[in-house]
Every structure is written in structure tokens, then in C-alpha cells.
Image (tube, rainbow, N blue to C red):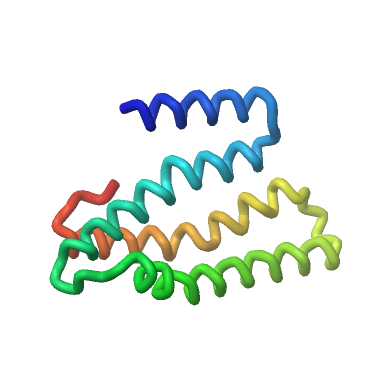
Length: 118
């Protein structure tokens, strides 16, 4: 409960004092990604595979690198092609592009874990 309250305070403070993009990045990292990755790692660590943290990170790295490379490339291309889209809106579009496949993959993964999709 303390982690949730501290996260909420940090996010509210950032929302008041920072930009929407920075606030979203911290929110996404603190509340979504970190919690989700911890759940996945805990399941795999105690499951049949007995995966170690280094193996878990190594298996995530190629997918994360491709996603980041795609987002950076598309963002750079959009800025150099004069699409007329603000950088903030382009950021939201890029996050949306990788979110849809992520939803399907994570839904299947949570179903394999025997848990409800969060």
C-alpha cells in the first residue's frame, strides 16, 4: 500500500509541475511496466523454468530494442517529413501503435499464468 501511495504522490506532483509526456512516462514505468514485469518474473522464477533475473532481462531485450528502434525511427521520420503532427501527439500515436499488439500478447500470457488480465 505504501508503494501505491508514494507512486500516486509522485505522479500527481509530476502532473502539476511537469509536462504530460514526462508524467506519462513515469506513470507507465511505475504503475504499469514495473508491476507487470515483477508479476511475470515472479511467476517464471517460481515456475517450472526457474528463470533467473538475468535470463529474464536477456529474453526481453531484443523485443524492447526493436520496439524502441521502431518508435525512434518513426518519430524521426515524422519530424523530417513535415506531417504537421505535434511531437506530443506523435508520442501518443507511437505508444498506441505498440500497445495494441502488447494487449493481445499480455492477455495470452496472463491466461497462461492462470490469472485474470489486469
